[in-house]
Image 1: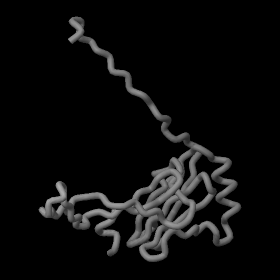
Image 2: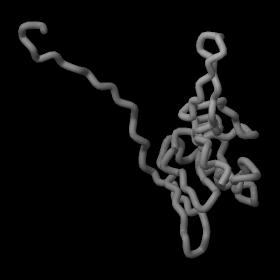
Image 3: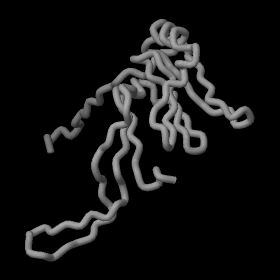
Amino acid sequence: NARDTDLVVFQEDKVSKVLFGKNLLSDAVGGGSVASIPEVLGTQISYAGEYGISKNPESFAKWGNDMYFTDEYRGAVCRLGLQGGIFEISSFGMSSFFRDLFIDLSGKQKIGGIDPFKDKYVLTARDVSLPSETSITIIDNDPTGG
């Protein structure tokens, strides 16, 4: 599969792939000694379309070569196919339903999964708030100040 050597990156407002595991030939000093470095991250290439996973990584599911996710910001349910890129599967007569649902449940859980018996992406939107970002405070209990 073509993704075996690429890293798929889901961000709030975009989905992209980063080339991975490709040999990079480099000449560190410009003197003709060339090194082969196979463990590098390459160029980030965005998929066509203005889709991302918003703040709902729990909506991600993979089945075969297809990856499914929701984009709350755009009111869409999407599939990332191996060949075809990102396709808004909610556009099949359900776009207004998901747009309204995601507006009503903004900032709430959208849990995705696969039903392997019916070969379908299954989604539940719950009225449960997403975890909030937290900050950690480190307290120095050493009385000597060290």
